[in-house]
Image (tube, rainbow, N blue to C red; front, side):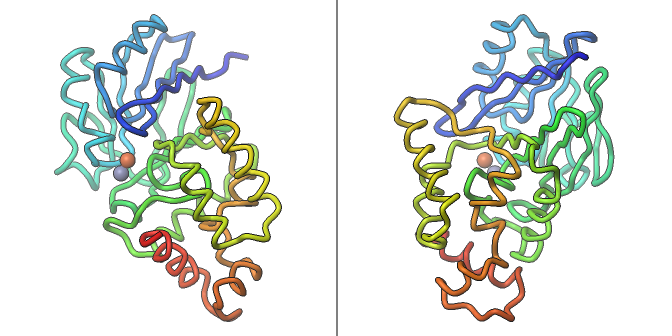
Length: 257
Ligand code: ZN
Ligand code: FE
């Protein structure tokens, strides 16, 4: 069976660019457009022709290269209907539960507001892969620029409900800094400590820590674990507090870490 081909490469300071390719149809999609020149060079190196652009949200490091890439490739742009006033060159507007296709591969559109109010993620069930933009990071989550903590917690729960083996393609290499913060919230978590140690080793070798998996994040990412009694007692939060309130407190602490 043919597999979706994924090419991941660093862009700008700490973004990742992703090209995904169906070898049978020849279709190639670019997930976000952080750096058009870099993306075009990667596509040329793979001998792939970019036919689609799938945006996760409107921020400049995600959609800022749309116009240049469309000019260079004629690609169709798929983006959230919510963002139709602030993402350029949209060809198709999508919403939660829609599906988008790359040749034989089909991704489910998951509305994941919080970082921004129009944020979406793309999930390929057959490929066990999710492109999550700035919603879920390895050992972290996106900053709440527009949404409420309750909205972000809802979005993170929908991602956490994906199968544990799902590979999670986050849009930034923030993992080492996230690990340092996570250890202040959940210092006695052995899975987190082991994860942090391997991240340090990977970064020392200059390797990417992305993709991660849903299973690894559920075990170690404090933003997916507000219900954990160890985290609650470490932060001095009551057992009967709602998960979204504990999530909000962890997010607040990270904002000033
Ligand atoms: Zn962003
Ligand atoms: Fe970003």
